[in-house]
Every structure is written in structure tokens, then in C-alpha cells.
Image (cartoon, rainbow, N blue to C red; front, side, top):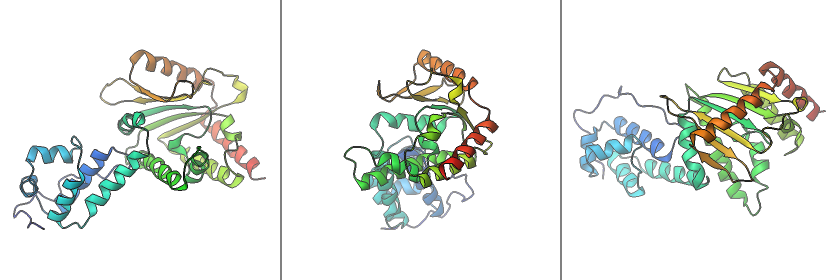
Length: 290
């Protein structure tokens, strides 16, 4: 049942942030709920009374501090005359979240909120910088995975990249091992497309892309890749550690993150400059296409 809007609704000019394609399910749902409420001319008090839900509870939903239920989404759809808009959104967000390991999900919020990400990768192009075809070539070789699961995983990975398209994206400091440029994870056309993508994003003022060359004879990062998220407001940095030897994990341990930061600095000091790195990627792409 559709309820008439409040005669004195909140102004449509009230700030309404754009959906973050990579925010948590609660945050994305809250942003869309608030947007639809304002577009329909409802105050929180009016909508809360119709659900029913207290103003404080509705505010928590809109701010991403409370998890939405499918039943609540269905009620709001009916009250605001949205058809199944919020139910469909919640289903999609839950499907995307389900493609990610449970232990990885806390990292999503750290990655989304970070002011900067310092990234070292010795084996393959990191997920935030992958093309769909490159990601498909990697994910499709997982033992026992179905074609449908591959596409769902790719969709989740592409959604993560939404943080790079925000008006104020985090600064990315990326160092790739030279071996990534020569490792054939797919056919030449896919590799060429991936290198073209690296060259394009490597020109972005918010992304510093460097290559650690073979000639550096560096071994310090060979045990696995990692990412350090520099958090805002003076909060301590957090790390995502990628290692088949220990299992991927997220760490907030100050001493462990500090040690990784030291390793990152040692790796980066041996890397080629940004300009030299892009030139190496360009030259490698030519070899893949001849």
C-alpha cells in the first residue's frame, strides 16, 4: 500500500551521496533508501510511522549502521511505490557479498575508507587493476568452479573497482614484479588488453604504478603480496596479506603492519620510476602482439 507523502517533506536539496559501488551492503542500501525516501517526499518520521520503525532506527539504516532485512525492503517498496526496487537491490548486494570469503569482508570497509593503498604484487595483476577478461582467465581455472560462479566472482571484483571511479578516490601506490608482465595467464589478446588498461590507469594522478625489474635481484617480497591501507583521521594502518603459505588474512596488529610497511619501502626503492615502468609495460605489450 502506498502512503501519501508528508505535506512538509525534507528538501530534495538535502545532501545525498552517490552510491559507492564497492561499499558494504548496509552502506549501499542505506544510501539508496535515503535517496528514494527524499525523491518520494517523505521525512524519516513519516516513513518510520508507516513501516513502522522509530526515527532513530530508520536513521541507523540510512547511515549503514543497521543491516536491512528483505521484509523491510519489501515494506518500503510498497510504501514509496517503488515496485521491487529495494528488494532487487538488496538481493543483488547480498549475491555480490556472498562471492567473497567471510574473512575477506572486513577488508572491504578498510579498502573503501582508506586514504591511500600501498600495494605489492609479485605474481599477477591485482584485482583492483584487472580487466574482466584477465580476471575471467584466472578465476575460470579454480578447481570445481562453474561458469555461473566465475561470472558472479568477476562481477564482485569489478564492483570493488568502483572505489577508483569515485570523485575523490584513494591514492594507489602499486609496485608489480616484472614477472607479471611475462606470465601468460591468458592468450595474447587478453594480455594486450590488460597492459593497455595498466597504461591507461597508470596516467591517473591518483595512481602511481611501478615495476620491480629482474635486474634489482630483490627477494624480499617473494613470499607473497600484500596491501597496506592508510586510514583517515590518524587511525592506524591495516594490512591485507596474500600468502598461500599462511592463508590470506586481514591484520590490524600494529607491529605486523609496521613490518610490512618497512618491506614495502625496501621493495619500492628498488623499483623503476613511474615513467620507466610505463615504458616497460608498453614495450612488453608490443612483444605480446608481435
